[in-house]
Image (cartoon, rainbow, N blue to C red; front, side, top):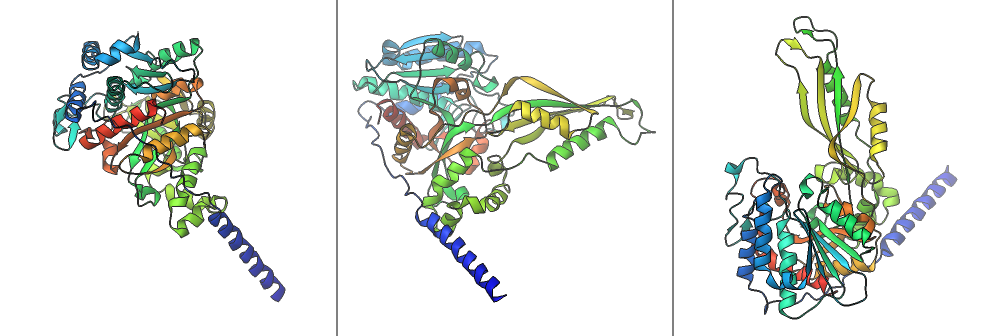
Length: 476
């Protein structure tokens, strides 16, 4: 027994030594900071904010083509040097700009989209959604965050650099899709195909996605800039159950609605496996050096503590989505009358696929997990597998991170798995350095404003967004 206790004590000491070694040898946090260009001589910030507000007054919805025509005329009028210097190639209502730097180096591609989502309850907005209201603190309107804020900031940066006689380090392409919110098939997909036909490869592709948020979610006392290095896939399926119709006064043991409800309940109570996938693991590793010692020890030894971290992250919807393929029932249909047993009952389920999952593997899982009485059919025109994961560390990621650290918030920069979708997925074949980041600082409560009520952009943030994009073009 004494010998056993000695061996146990030795094992504990070895384990503690390994944990401490990994913690103490954790790489130091990168603290490099770029220099953002000074554009004060070329930019009137109040006029710049007003131009953004004007852009928000165009209701660029899929069913309003005239709004896109008007918006394009507005861009030509408000950014004259950009339209005199850069070439512009239209793809329907989408616009592809090219700024020739005259330098022989790989170009970069900046993405944003013109279209916005519809407004379901305008009466719940503090200001009318397409009024483009500016007050002392915010620019209000549908599209302020998603994604005209980025589009206009990119054009403001381009115009300001031209005014000051500066040119980009390498060629710059700007791709502004018109149908991102409905899949990007007529905009981004066609622009990406054309760029590929030209034989272009990009050193960097940057789209919307991550942003600066309070660091408290990750245990930080500073804001964190979440730099998307991948995005989840998208798949919608319809489940359908069938049964004999009849009178509700003599129901059978099972019904179509009951079978369907049981199927949904099974999927909700047996979610897809959770794991620290590549992007999420990298995020935790990146923030580890900024943590207090106890948390740093845990994050430096994920080989041991991964189950503990997974259980903690599963507790919140926003972090649970970083760990697994998620499912959300979104539509239900059954019945024709209150006293009639329905012949069919159907449910629409929306899945967001984590890296490592594919549409084929998910479909196979559903067909195995559900009884034969439930049919599974893919629905919707838009389906996608998860994007490839951008390889980091890389010089490109380091440059983006240095620019982000130059913003007033001085954030900790971390890679991130984007749980939504962007146009970037259509351009993946054109670069191995695809990122998703919007240089704006928001609070957790602002996340509900994306596609929700009272969308707004903090007024003081906007000039810093412009400087970030200008610095990126200049190669800083």
